[in-house]
Length: 198
Image (cartoon, rainbow, N blue to C red):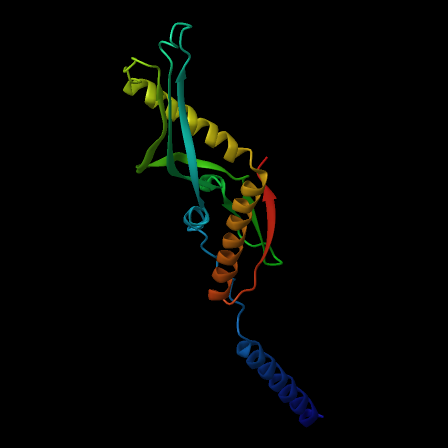
């Protein structure tokens, strides 16, 4: 009887030892690494489109009935560039949820900054004056005509829905690629969910 108790006790001790060893051998679960999306603003800036434009600035003054005195007209053409993209400061990338879904907030596209004028491209294409009228337009008048022409061009580009959609899609494509690449570096597979700016 004593021997059977001793056998039972030995069996219990052996089972407990095996359980303890099994528990020790299991690797502990490491927390998922937190991705760093701090370059999102830079990526959104990279997506900005540079649009080339050819524009015309116009000045004119009607003349009087007498020999059309005072009549003058000046048109000059020039090339310039306008940048179209999303406001990078409004781009927000969330940390992945439990299903590895990353939410990205992207604003609508817009004209970014002021247009650049290629001064070397400015050419007078029309220059007319009334007979015996040699007064030219002032530098200030020419500058105002250029500002007006630039404003018309900006309004035209801002109202171009196709161009704006293209610029926003380019930003989304690059941001999605960026998020997926960050995940791959960490050994994770991320999917993207888009959120519109309210």
